[in-house]
Image 1 (spheres, rainbow over the protein chains, first blue to last red):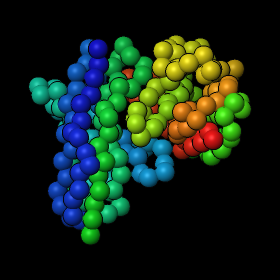
Image 2 (image 1 turned 45 degrees about the vertical axis):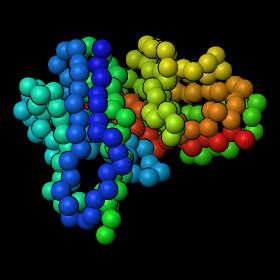
Image 3 (image 1 turned 120 degrees about the horizontal axis):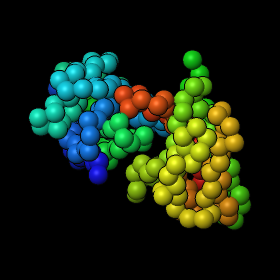
Image 4 (image 1 turned 90 degrees about the vertical axis):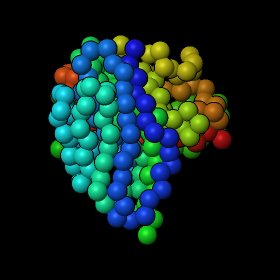
Length: 112
Length: 114
């Protein structure tokens, strides 16, 4: 079956620090990969996606590269801001499965 | 473009009462999903529809929960009778047919059962 494993949180960083949130996956078939962000009191929003190997998704300074050889899709940002404090979810969708498989989410707290 | 619209945003009711949550998906999307999110259990998929037909309801916790999609632009999730352990945030999401298309989420309904 399909599964997504994310690093445990919470992750606490100072403003302007470098962020990495690890995500690895197991999938039957060739998945599309997604990162979602959930700000306090809100729904999940798509942050970025990648649909084939070596694709890099990017948005709002965040990046993630689809690494088929390591089955990974790690989220990175060079300089985090307090406003980036949220829960981040890694997810996948395969051609044979219409639903998303989510990781458990990683809470990021950025302090001044 | 209008996103996924859920109503109500908040619902507080007493146990034993019937609760109905509503969702309007993005126009043209073939799939509709209902999720529940709690601190203890995280994000759980309850049920999803394809072209208004329920495909997988294995996540529905009990017979007290039911979901319908009478047409492409409307779905309901009903809890009858409600219990305090049903308190959670319920999200609706919709997506297109292709695997490279993401799900789009509504803002959720925060449900409190007293």
